[in-house]
Image (cartoon, rainbow, N blue to C red; front, side):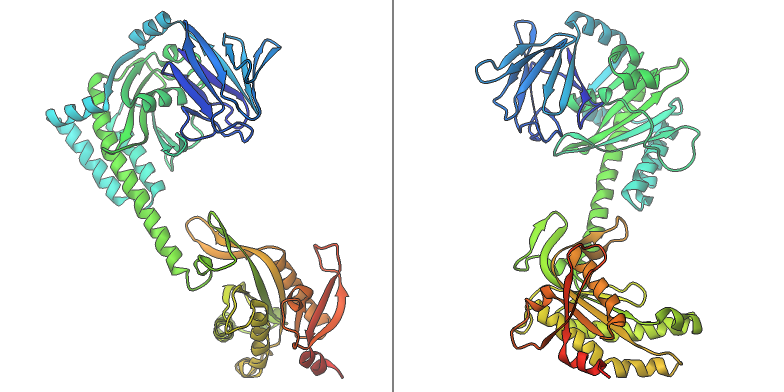
Length: 520
């Protein structure tokens, strides 16, 4: 048997157990051992048994492979692609260093005979479950599990309930563990554990032995161990955890393995039984279906929330010309309008909270209608401010022209909107900053998803709005906006200013009508 310990690199701490005569290594998910190092090729190397020796072979990788024999390095290439491995050598691939640990076959068989008390394949478990009549305790445990699974409101709550049910079903256990696997790369994507006697949510800082997990997932077997430290004496996580006895079963849905469940005794001398192994297999099949169903419901809920946001911003970018999609982020050329109410803080101090909210609601509603008429979307309304984005041509106008016309209409509508504020003894004045350029749009948050846009154009638009007060001009736009406007627009150069966060000075403009209106 050969174990590979990752001692340096992105996958440091992982252990791979080689359970077949030949395994491949690389970054591609179709490898037996998939590594995360970007300096490793998709199919970098192979380890195989040859004449009772373990041999490493470089598969023509881009950055090559090195086998280090106590400081003496053997670089492998096309003319010399192989090297015999021994205990004490190191395999260097990119920024990753692997340490092979070899055990004699006879010693491995003896250890397994001593420590693996029982093992069952998925087929054997299915036959056993169909052919045996469950005990009353098993029926009660399964009934309680199904009840808890039905009550789970989220995948996180589902894992909590499965762990709690595991400890209830196996009173000898001190720890219950769940490992969910990313099917694309064959690595854990979520682990959670519960310690008996500890209330609250599942913990993710409990040492979990991936050596045991690798064996269960690799062979699709349910296993019962006693004296676990003897079986996995090369695994630091097993030794440090002090595992005495362990039951482990794959989370098998009937079509695929999505992870595993494990119950352990980390104190005392008692061990689990073969009957417990059968019960855990039954338990795992129920839990697997519940976990998958919960994650599907969560994905559907997220999809519905995304669809609900379509009228606001982000999904509108999907399929739009000129956008570049990367995951959940859309990059595009857009114009950004930022408006803010001047003296809002002083106004809010004089009015009641309900009056302030009513005035803001009325103002934002009118601005939202104007933005929509010009083909834009309001992204955020933080307090008294409005952040809107324009990214497509509307009625023959560029997005920059749409943003500018929108700003004009907001200011033209200001006297009407201000009348409601004046009736409450408040004054409504606003400043508008407009900028254009490359922005990134996406959804942020986990449970509460919210659309947003980020990038230098957004920051500059906010800085331009701040400058409207000192320059006594209600609307200011940048050079990047002016460049996107048709030649007949009367853009008036105002000044060349330094904006916070930018080293180069910025040329700013307004429309002639607003500059003239502010002149004495």
